[in-house]
Image (cartoon, rainbow over all chains, first blue to last red; front, top):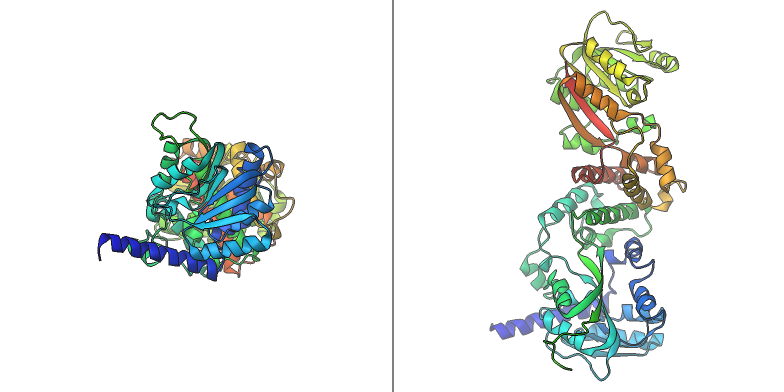
Length: 304
Length: 257
């Protein structure tokens, strides 16, 4: 197989992965745990992060036109519209299956939305009008040509607009540091067997594992932060966490009984522990919220 | 300090496992007593004698003399034990006919009016080469620092409301919980000053104690998902001690005469 054919096959695989995921089974996992949300919101004024942005950067009013980068099936878009984050939205994603769901659900919910398929590795972003709010929920780390995407986001952002990333910026291809592996495996050894059936021991996933599932997963890691910083003025850089809870529960969380106080306690304690280790610089934050503005002056930036 | 916490079979399990044992008696026998039972031991501030009975049953010693400042507790200890192996007396200055092989004390020693005198007494009661063991609170009289209480409080908050005493929250709660632990650090200092080859091991204990207290009566130890909660807290606390984010409340201190 030639290099170009191989790249096309992997892209198709990624699309199929996301299409199946978003049409067959709504996304659910450790990140949906309300306690994690509570901890995250504690860092954004006690509000959901997009409400925080609305209140702090838009005077509590909706943005006029938002762009949702990597919108998937549009769950975040619909939640944001319901909370008055924007008046209308354009959503872009690679997954045709996800976009179909997003279009249908937006119509049912009365969200003024347009959904367009884009390959972020090469396509330009919609630019009929500039967006005063662009948000990317957990998408950038899937993009190999990250520089292209971030430059495109900058190009279509209004001069006084705000770009918000909520996403993974941990190790590329989830090649966990030894310390994280040790900490997680110690905790896993104390978990009831039921909660470690899916993943009894944490190791470093192989490249072939990604190729067999989602080839785009974590293709870029901490570089997400560096590339964003190289293009935007980052006005807020908020460490959310997930550094232990993600590797520990990415698969095992599906066994967590949401109605079991004891199992939820185990999850909650891992979250508290993770935060304390982060605050003391023992581990970094694998997930961040970054609030960004266009750089007012950059002589090297091409005119748009 | 709630003595039931010290008696709970899960308390300090992680510490003992990290040190290659399952509990205090096996750690003493395997690591410090060469695998054998000593003849005579002295129990300082023995309370109602629960630890004496546990150590005797596990084969740490053949007989013990227990002393305590509290006459009522001495009476209780006497009532609960076999006089052929256990002898109890009230006061701090009970005379011993012969020196003993082992002197031990737990957290009640930190509450003694004059703990230094007890440590001096331990030294004079031991045979040369005899072992002194203190397993108890070893921190300052004021308890953990405010920043440590804040972190401990977050783990208490982590316990699901359905398993947690609704009163168990806030700094005032934790201050009250840790008040009255005694001046444990003075005991550790006294042991280090008086004995040779002193070894001090961090046991942790305060964070799991706060969790134990907050969830008291809610956890059933025949359920693995319930047992996992104190064990996870113990594991996390020992790691936080290693990173010096928390300091150890309890200490395992051994010294030789």
